Each structure stands twice: as C-alpha cells, then as structure tokens.
Amino acid sequence: MTTATLRPSVMKLATGISSFDIIAKGGLPKNRTTLISGTAGSGKTIFAVQFLAAGIEAGENGVFVTFEESADDVRKNMRSFGWDLDKWEEEGRLAFVDASPDPEFDIVEAGGFDLGALLARVQHAVKKVTANRVSVDSLGAVFSQFSDQSIVRRELFRIASALKRIGVTAILTAERTDDYGPVARFGVEEFIADNVMILRNVLEDESRRRTIEILKFRGCDHQKGEFPFTIVPDGGVIVIPLSAMQLSMKSSNIRTTSGNAELDEMCGGGLFRDSVTLVSGATGTGKTLTVTQFLQGGVATGERCLLLAFEESRDQLFRNATGWGFDFGKLEQDGLLRVVCDYPDVSGLEDWLVTIQAAILDFKPQRVALDSLSALEHVGTVKAFREFVIGLTSFIKHQEITGLFTSTTASLMGGDSITETHISTLTDSIILLRYVEMFGDMKRGITVLKMRGSWHDKAIREFKIGKGGMQMGRPFRNVTGILAGTPVHVSPNDVERAWSHFEAGVGNQDLGMPREPESAERRQPAKSES
Image (tube, rainbow, N blue to C red; front, side):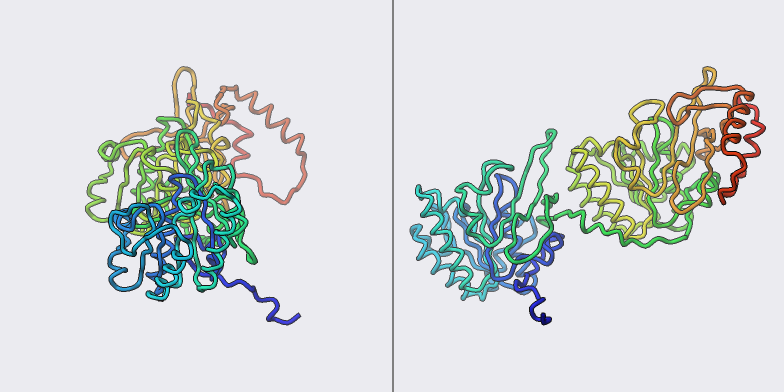
C-alpha cells in the first residue's frame, strides 16, 4: 500500500468557529454541502452567518441565500455579534441572494420560487464575489410549497448537486419540530446532504441548554455525541468540547502559600502552583475566610488574583475582609485584585464558563478563587455542572494558575457533598471544614483530606476565627465520627484499647512504609481540650 492511498480523500475546510473545528476534527468537508437541522431558537441562522463571517475574516468570500428573513433584517440582527455585513458587501466580499417572501428591501430581484432561476442567481453571486462559502437559510421555506415528498427529494438533490458543481463549501439549514424527533421536517433532507449536523435547544429543569451533534460526515471522521455550545454577543457560536480539555497540563513542584502558615504546614509546605483545591464545609465554617486568606496570600507575593463570587455581594465581601484585617479596596486600586459578583441564575453554565475564561484571559491572574460551586450547581443539570467543572479546572491548569473553589455541604454537620457533586476527583486537593459539637459547645475543625503528590497532615485540627483570620489549634483527640458528621467523645482508655487492637491486627509486618510521626502520640492520647 502506497503513502498516497493512506491520505484522506476528503479535505476539510476550517470554519473558524470557536472550538467547532475540534469536534469536526479539522472543519467541514471541503466543497460539499452540510445540512444543519434544528428547532426554533437553536442557532441555525447564526451558525450559517458566522460560517461566512469567519471565512471573510480569513480571506474567503461568501454568499448568503435567505428564504425567510429579508436581507435587511439579517444585516440588522447580525450587527450585535460584531459582523458588519454592509461593509463586507460594499467591499465585494459578501453577496446576498434575497428570496424571502414580499421583501421590504431587496438587493437582488427575488422573483418566484423557480429553483432553476434561483440557482442561476446563486451561481452569479458566487462568481461576482469569487465566493468559497455559501449559506442557504432555510430549506423549509422553499419546500413547504411542495406536497409531494418525491419532489422535495429531487429538488434538494438538485440544489446539493448545483452547489457541488460550483465548487463551494455550503451550509443548508432546515427546521425540525422536536429536539429528539426526526432529523428534519420532510424526512429526506438528511439522506441527500453529504453531511448532517443537529442543533438542539432543550428545556431542562426550567433552563434552556444548547447542544450540537455531528450526525454524519461522508468519507471523513468526526467526534461523536452532543457537545454544549452557547451564543454570546461579539462572539456568536462558541462550542465547548470536553475533548479540548486534554490531560496535557504541566505540573510543577513549586509551592505557593494558602495565606495561612499553619495550613501550609498541614498541606506539606503549601499548595502546588498549578493545582486546584476544593474547600468543602457547611455554612459558617469559614469557607469564604479561607478564600480571603488565599487571595491575601497571593497579593502579598505580588500575584494578581481574581475572585468569582456567587453568594455574597461585593460590599459584603469587602466588609467581611475588612473585619479580618484585609483591605480588598486597596488591593483593587493597586491592580492586584479583581472581583466579579453576580447571581448564578443570570446565565447558563456554558455562558458562565465562557465569561470566566474571558475574565481570566483579560486580567491574567496567577490565582483564581470561586465562591461557591454549590451556587452554580443548581443552574443546570448534573451533567452540565460536571462539564462546567471539567472545563474550568482544565482551563485553569493549562494557564498554570492556582485555583481554589468552595462547596457548601447539604447538612450542617457535613459529610455528604463531595461525592454528590461529582467534583472530588477533578480537584488536586480537598480541605474539609466541619462543625464539632462537644459538651454543648460548637467548635470548628479542619483537615486536609487529599493532597495529590504530597504528604499532608492527617489530623483534624480545631481552629477559631478572629482578627487576622483563621487561628489553628491542636488536633482533636478522643473524638470520633467528625467526618461522618456524628462526632462522639470517647475516653482515653477506649482510644488506647482501639489502637491496641489495631496494632495487634497489623502485627510487626514491615510494609516498607514509614510510620506517621504522630503514631507515638496516639499511644498516649492527649487530654481533650474540652
């Protein structure tokens, strides 16, 4: 077998649409037609125009054929995305073929729906601007006048063949009535087009979520399944493929402070620079304080910090920081801190991911804190939330940023949020904050549950909140069930008997593992602080 026979027979055209070319593995098949089918509001027209706009910006001219909206309406609607269609027309880089019914203003005389005449006008427009790309919006407006399905199939084949002969890469849009029903309205469109893509705008838990799926690419490969996407002003369609979140991030041994020297010691010397830490605890256990110390520790070493807050207002955050001895206002004035506050429900998770990524690229922080993930968890489905966390953690790590997220447990005593939110495996370190009830007093406890790539303290330590932030105390002794949310005080004799049984079971086996420094202390339990 020669090398030539191994080359792909179908070349691909990079669309220029953000991240779409990743799931399309290079773009749309060149000089072929692609059917884009979707329900109302799924983004078909925007995708079709953006395909042309991205091509024009890359030096490839285009033709837009419209059967529903007038050319003037299309121009007005697309200005909000930053695409100046009028300017491109004046420069001879874009041409309209307006076949909309009763157009208010027509660039090209529409005439009747005779496909022969229509295709002639399309061919003329392609030659006039030397177009490489054509978008037709939409087929439903053309074929709704035909009652015979065989005619629809024949005329669709006629359009696809004509566009292929012209030598352009074309997009045809079509309507569907159900996001998970037939591919298109007439049931034949998907069999004629070389390539088929489906846009969905599904209502899930009272929120709309857009996804894109490549159903088929004839003769070439593509990624399978649905991928979330969003539509933003001055950007258009932005696809969010998890496949782009590759496990190729760098991992350094450089430590950075958490903002608390004793917590750094518990973490084995501090947090790794390009890692993400999850702080989990019930309301009032000190999660926001941990975030504040994390930010203060960064600016103390000259690092730029970004705070994303979804539970407290800006003024409340600044007031709380002042109470702990930190001046957020001055840090902002010095350009070392930027605070983004908003209600999580104002946008979908895909929109929030794009917004956060844009804020990071604009401010270029060395640290990012998000307070809290639990507020965003209820914006979308569990799957959408996990995709959001994967996308954000991957982006932060690729940017070599130190990240810290907080999560609120469902119960006051904790013990249930880590696995339920499906984010524990996505973070490098986990710090748990817990309430510990002892003889009528409510104390706070902290422990490092996980620290990838590093030794860490296994003890659960008491801490207090006061001026200057978190003040660490001694480890809790003679108390069990803290992590389970059911702390129970036990006598020193019970602890000694438990350790005796444990060590008797283990025996004197040499497992090649060093004994923990605190094991000797466990043999003689310290008296409880209480």
